[in-house]
Amino acid sequence: MSVQEVPVGAVVVYNQPENGRYLHAEKLPFGASVKLPDPVGIILDTAPLKEFAD
Image 1 (cartoon, one colour):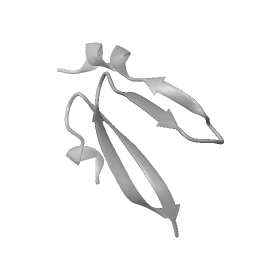
Image 2 (spheres, one colour):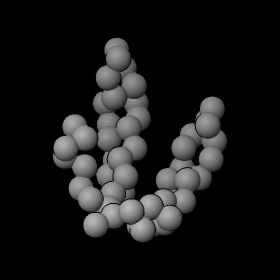
Image 3 (cartoon, one colour):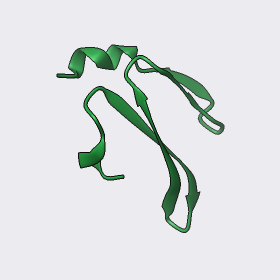
Image 4 (tube, rainbow, N blue to C red):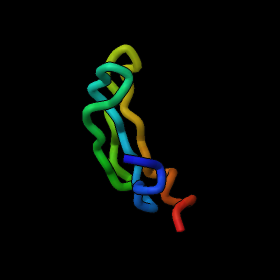
């Protein structure tokens, strides 16, 4: 998925890195809570991003 393919009002989380590429990308709307696994280990609240969407 390229940056041009990301819909307005969404966040994309890439995971499962292998050989310099990501095998999976998950699109979530702004407002969703995104769990970033260890070693980051946080839950990212994307609701504040809504104010920047067209």
